Amino acid sequence: MDHSRLRARVVAGAALAVVAAAALAVSPDVVFARAAWLAAEPIRLVAAAVVLAAIRPLVAWPTTLLAVFLGYGLGAAGFPLALALVTLTSVPPFLLAKRYGRIGAAADAGEAFVDRTGDLRSVVASRFVPAPSDVVSVTAGVAGVRLPTFLLGTAIGEIPWVAAGVLAGASAERLTAGAVAGAVDPRVVAVAGLTGVALLGPTAYGWYRERGRGS
Image 1 (tube, one colour):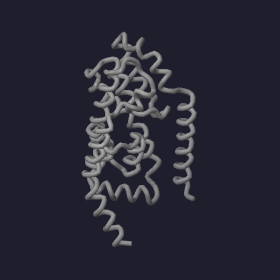
Image 2: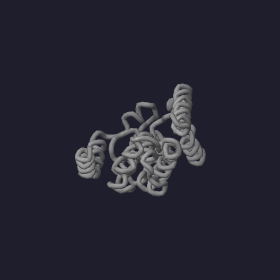
Image 3: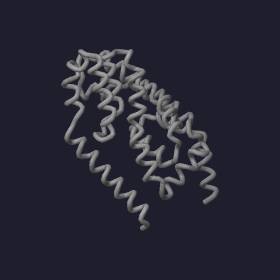
Image 4: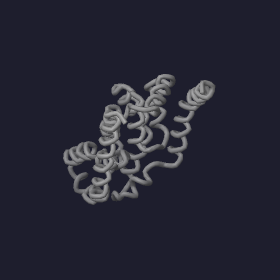
């Protein structure tokens, strides 16, 4: 095994260990227990949301938590800030994967697929699919998507999820982990998922058939 591949695996393993330890030590309920106090002062709430966005990748929280949290404190007016923070909090796992994960057959296949689909289209469509946000970020990094395109595609693709989270937070009397888990209406999941499949499906099928003929 070459040194670059070994180093990438060591870094990935260490990152997973840190995330697992942080997730066990801190839970969303710890934050939500103080949500009412934070929401009483908008400046305090925004500062807390920025801190949450910064540490979210380390504790493996869902990005929807930010939208629900800001919706609870600011109502629908929290949507722009929630979308900005959800987009920015997706950057660390993307950069980590882009720096250390672009090796092997999976990276080559991902890059070929993105080249065929288009950087922006592939990121937007992947965000519409109801998959964990960090999985999409890592996949985009491994595939070699450019950072500006990743940011724009993430901002567009996260719109339905952030809107649903903000609305769920705005309508909640108190915040709990269950508020995040049930934040998204199943109809939103279905429509967004079908949109993502429609954007990627034809290209994916053609790419699969070409690779099958080639092999």
